[in-house]
Image (spheres, rainbow, N blue to C red):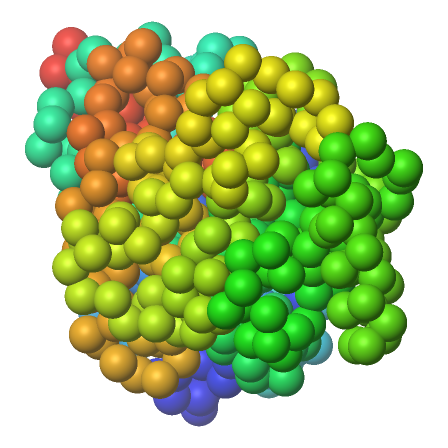
Amino acid sequence: MGPTIRSISGFGPAPLPLVLEPTFPYGEDLLQFIWAEGLFETHALRTTDRRTVEVVHPGRIQRNSGPDLHDARIRVDGQLWAGTVEVHARSSEWNAHGHQYDPAYDNVVLHVVHEHDAEVRTSRGRLLPTLELHARIDSALLTSHARLMQERGFVPCAGALGRIGAEHWTSWLDQLAVERMERRAQTLRSELASLRGDLACLFFHQLARAFGLKVNAEPFGMLANAVPLRVIHRVAADLFRTEAVLFGQAGLLQVDFVDAYPRGLQQEHHHIARSHGLRPAPLASWKFGRMRPVNFPTIRIAQMAQVLVRCRGALLDLLNTGALMELRALLEVTASDYWTDHFQFDRPATPCPKRLGRSGADHVIINAVVPVLFTMGRLHGDQRQVDKAMDLLRSLPAESNSVVAGWTSLGVKADRAVRGQALLELKDQYCTRRRCLNCAIGNHLLRASVKQVASSGPRR
């Protein structure tokens, strides 16, 4: 008597690298999708040994080790089985992957293959019922998938987005926004562990990267590593000393200056660095080329110094700020007087205040405040912090960047930051990686291709 199949063990070897079969050169993930979505001819299903098959539930695709689909319910010759489903291009891949020795695959209730070329058994010797699909898959689906994989536009489905209604976007983008926050929170939890659980230090690092914008995010991160938060706490009551620490640790005070102001910063930094054993970050990492002077790292450092002074180094106070307008007010700072007529040390320029305006403050909120708030909420099980982070994204306008502009050109607009973050996630984690099978829009287009052909008659 065979084993009763109810649940999987959750253990097993890591999946082997995918080798595409000539008979199904699309990847096993497409075959899994076809099975899970029922995109094949389902009339009179039979196993390769002629037993009847009824799919009560195909199962849920999972990406971890072990069988491909969990929680399946399959009726074979009238007997209902609950367990897992494994999908292969050829039956013989079962043995090639070593599943015949792995107890994690003993609860597979159905082996779904494109082509049946071998009988296979579990580690307990049970002969697996096998369902062959190659004659049941419509070529229109394969053609649509191949087109998505070969498209070289901004996104694979760029030419088809005009056919996608708003109802298909709403819930998917909501899910992607949370997915992006969860992914960032996972990264921040790892960073927090490396910082020995110092949440204020984590926020300081995120704040610095946000001030660096994309082009200088890494140098600003290096600066944060070079400036112990305990030193910030010591100097944050004094703007001059705070600037001395930041510019000195940035490596930007290691030259002979003409102006009195940078010479004073240089002297002050020398004194503080000697007292606290500080070592500056590499000067060569800073980027000034091909950017607006108002975004030069010198200006951004001076603005960050103002924020640190405003909160007296108590950075977590920014996270505890209630209303969006109050948070913006703390961040909409103006660099110190020296920078009114300078963009770099010793280089006079036409006077103009170097203010971090509304869009600059919003950038810091989106890229530093929101992800750290979300991470704190997940870390402490505090849903209020998670909700506060998401509410901030819903309240802020979307950032202007090349990705959002690309989506806008295709008619997919981001009015709020929450949608802008979702579209960044979609482009980075799905479109660029050709994960159309995992995308709600890609899913819809593939299903629609089958329905369209079905309505006009069979096509094989």
